[in-house]
Image (cartoon, rainbow, N blue to C red; front, side, top):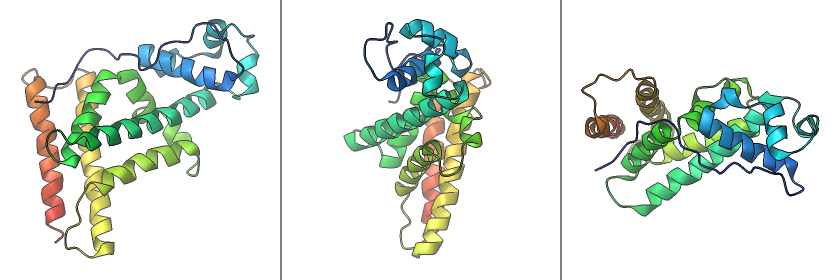
Length: 215
């Protein structure tokens, strides 16, 4: 049985506290991710991070023009880490199809790490980033991996890829909706943990059925 946490986000990283090494850019990204995980993207500020890392108020500007650029770098790192996490979950081959394991891991992450998830999928940073930016590339890598888990069967290559992309978008939209509705308390009271898992299974089953229709 899949288990989902509906509590507030938990930090994926420990705040660094004092700054003890020479890579301030990396320290800022790590500290920003820790703050995002604990309190959400809106809580990140250069002044607070500078105090935490015990550097001057001007020091962060040597690496990022503003806080938005820092958060874009943090989102890029979050997408890369998230993609690696999903691939590791799929590789364990414990229960269900690869697509089902990925879908359940996606929702579980979104419910456990709401601040990080909002930075990735519910903030303006991805939409505002240039299409060829590292942030878009990291997000696209995750989507392409998601697509790769959809079997095109006997369909021709071009037709199969178009269908795969459409089905992947629909599935991701459904999973994203589940995460955001749960985080905002909009799911009906009857939807408890076990039925949420069943809802994810239904979304996966619909996607797999749609792909079978391409044959």
